Image (cartoon, rainbow, N blue to C red; front, side, top):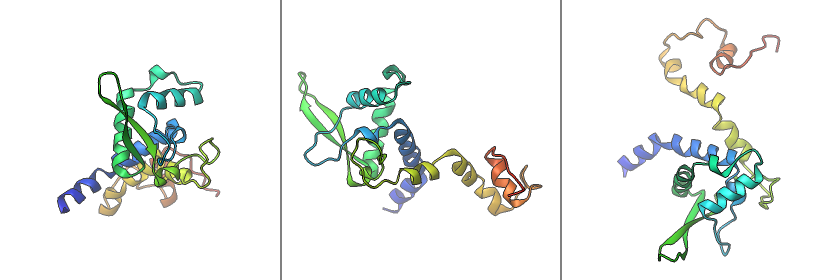
Length: 169
């Protein structure tokens, strides 16, 4: 069990970045909570998110990558996968629906019916400026020099994230 725990810990960034990607695309907003509601297939999800985002063409979405992201989020408990009715060839189709946790990750202003949302939290903590700041932690702990060592403490965060820093604040 310890090996599995280390493996999951070391790869936890996969889940947070996958979550960020599907949230930015609006995937979770087009899914419904499990229960009696049938899930949506990857093709249905693609059609729904392209319909909601005028700028995006369905051909721009990598179907295989989306499917893999959905499967990864199943392993985290955000969504669940079930098999829909079998096709003509006798093979069932994967469909995806939200779990209770997944409901918390829908935009509250969407037609999803979400009344409570943690979208802003996830978008903030998984976004590039925070991600970049944490990537500097090993050097910070080790006290090794970096190109930002000559900057005052507040400027270092801004500089590592290509943000302007206003000393008059």
